[in-house]
Image (cartoon, rainbow, N blue to C red; front, side, top):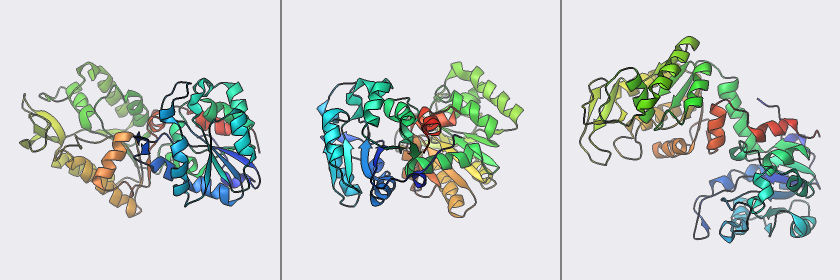
Length: 402
């Protein structure tokens, strides 16, 4: 993994510190409906302000495509950021570059915080335009990236800017990178991966990378049906990508060559439709009725997974094991997640999870706070699972020295 500096390496007192965060939060009628991404930046911003830095916060919101779109202005977020920072005053600049940004930044005192307007109001942001990055760099003395969730994008504020100023990872970025390194990069073995979700086609690269690095790959959700179909197992009317059978068999062959055990369901909960309260029953794999769908793992499959996890020291999780949004088809996801959480609390397993559906599933199971680390990074987390280099992370290691 890329070597990177942290806040501990920066002498920030009296200096202007540009902090790239991800405040791409959900909004409705001009109000924030989930402030999690704001709240997770508090350690970085507070530590910088308490060390008398002049903190300049950079973010995007939505997809305005280089135009000023009032509906995605960051203005309403300044007050929310101040609340998250314990009542600290947060000023706002109506642009992220140019005379207005320069005026507001110049007025900052030591320990002050300003939020600049949406980076994506300028086309140069998504184009990774060096000239735009230079205009941003003119506002600061140091650069801190605390937006791992944007690290898979080579944008001006995540990639080009990192080459123009002495830089470091913020506390959120640092925690994310350390958690990821301790799972796939330098894990304690045995290492297990749980991968679920609907389609094999969306996670081919993830699966291909994981079978090379893990000892056990547990496959659930709709994608497990594709693997079962590829092995010649009748799956009734279940969700399945029949045209991906060859790819699934290739993954199985690569796993066998690498010594990775692939765990597929041995029994399943089936029903004729996906709806709450529908009649359902447990059947063995291979005995799925022609008019029924596999909607969750059965109890034997759940027990087998939990037993395997009990032997593991590290776990990475992406995707639910069944149709967890509709009870009772959340049973497998809930049971396995709670078992993993228990192993984490007992100090047996280092557990890292990420991806939108994954976070929702762990929250649903009531264990999101019990995993070692839960990433909200989405696309960046998936690209890391695929083994790809992330531009925003690579740039931290390649940027100017301190």
